[in-house]
Amino acid sequence: MQIAPVEDWSTLDAALAALNQHDWVCFTSVHGVERFFQRLLHLGRDVRTLAKSRLAAVGPATAQALAAYGLRADLVPRVYETRGLADELALQSAGARILLVRAAGVGAALAQQLQQAGALVDQVAAYRTIAPPELDACLRELLPRTDLITFASASAVHHFVRALGEELGRTTLQNTPTACIGPVTAGAVRAFGATPTITASEYSSEGMVRAITLWSRERQGTKP
Image 1 (cartoon, rainbow, N blue to C red):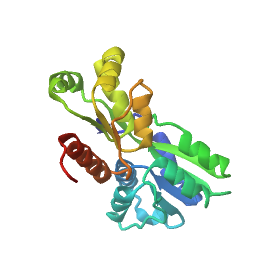
Image 2: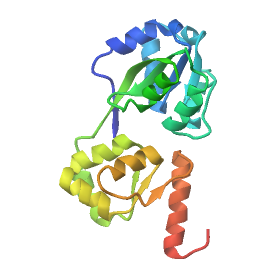
Image 3: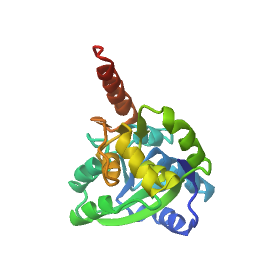
Image 4: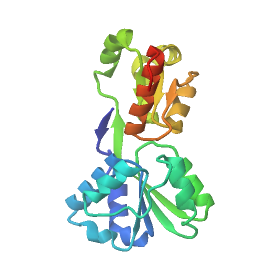
């Protein structure tokens, strides 16, 4: 995937102008943190505008991205995934107003769960994920000699299938081992009729690497 700016800045800019109205600002990716603060600084503001808000990060990498701006995440869920974030934030969010900083076009499950817990939720897109124009040609060249396909997000699965076309994309997922960073990504693979070979138990890049290493050793019949 490639990370691209949103096509219209107006919604994000309005949210940045009203940050003092939010009890929580919730970041679901490193890219969201980076694009959020790039735009904030572009508009002539700085981190002081977040003084009245608590910060939530989906996992340690996202929390580290906040730390690069001198900010500490008030909440990092024990399960590094949006469902884990929703579960823990919901316990603290009854009556709170929450700003979710997301990628464009993501699902509404996190917002819906927080709303059911009594929160007032505003969602804003800080960036888009797009497929590189050369993705189709690269996949067709690499897939014949590929032993395992890794997916670090559900959107990566959808870009993969779109690049190959629905029929070939489904067939490839069904016939090639796949590794997923967590259950949401695994669910995207299952939506195309395939069963993920590996789903990391720790929902991070490091966790996926460990899961793949274990799988590879088991295939080769070597000890962990």
